[in-house]
Length: 134
Image (tube, rainbow, N blue to C red; front, side, top):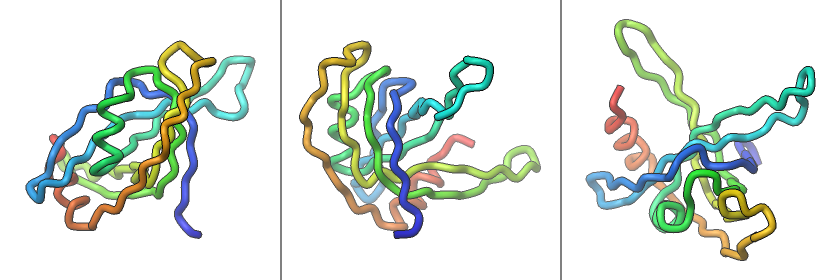
């Protein structure tokens, strides 16, 4: 099981659903994931970009909002692009499943929403990269 990632965190903004030319839907959102160890008592956070496809994307855009806590399992996807003559690397998590854990600021209200899994083709992923504004 190479290239598997499991994360738990909170959405930093409302997810927005989009569609590629092939008709597949995807949504992107950023997940704030607390680091396990904090220096000097200050909690540090990593911000991880997530991409969900098709039914998972639809459910995320429908039922999640900024501050929602989720568990994401998926794989790391890297890429690169050039802007202003500078080559930049990208790092995203391609979600295989997203489990809804709690609504914003309601830690005790855990939802029992089932996981939704998905399959995305490499052609669809290339369309997303071509669609990026940078």
